[in-house]
Image 1 (cartoon, helix red, strand yellow):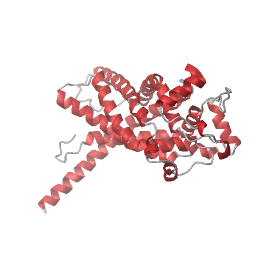
Image 2 (cartoon, rainbow, N blue to C red; image 1 turned 90 degrees about the vertical axis):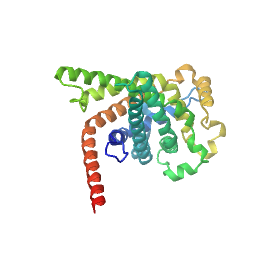
Image 3 (cartoon, rainbow, N blue to C red; image 1 turned 90 degrees about the horizontal axis):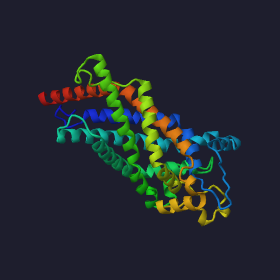
Image 4 (cartoon, one colour; image 1 turned 45 degrees about the vertical axis):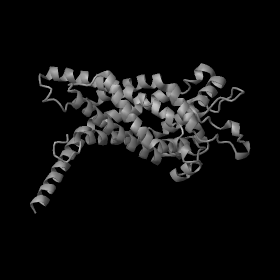
Length: 329
């Protein structure tokens, strides 16, 4: 709501803040699983058909065997920064563009097609702004245990353009959260409308109705599962493009073993070495991690959104009173 004359869209900021905090918590809680998942996805089968990791748990046991359990958290700070910024930008952009569409069109609700376009636009802006952080986090996660560098050192390993490795796929993958949040939003509206009819209240009286924690978790899981299955081949390609070099010794690291740096190169490498099943290698790990992460994010966002909204209203009132006192002084 920008009716205070300041031009600030407080409701969009409330949505963005709630989403960013939810993302921060879910990323931290599930980060070891994310590291195992990323290292598992980045590995490409050799010409002899050998795999270093046959299961997701092999990554975890390697960390224990090498006494590098804390290395499962390598890159956490960078990932948290990236998650917080990207979630804030995304939720703010999504809420702002959605509100703008409704105001311009005069519609009472947003349709599926328009929702997809709005979500994709918000996602594209977010990806461009945060891609270097995303690339750095992936390099840190896929580095050998105990050998991960800091953010500045990681980005300094290549050219500035290499910090944007996978940008093209990332932009395409904006359809992933677009699908997820469209499904979530549509299911959420149906549940809230059902609650309104059950309570016998008007839409205006129940405009701040929130989902229960279980409902938000369940809807988040369902919506993210659908989005993940539909976009997984591109997700694995992006991980391969952004991954650090294989963790062998420098003398054993031929240039041909470097991960492909283009989408076409990654797709060709997967097809030639692993066939069709390779496009879905690690799908179960991706679904496990992303579903838990997204469901947890949306659950936290739903539960703290009311508190965030009240806090921002208090801030808005404080700023308004302060400005009024300055003008009358």
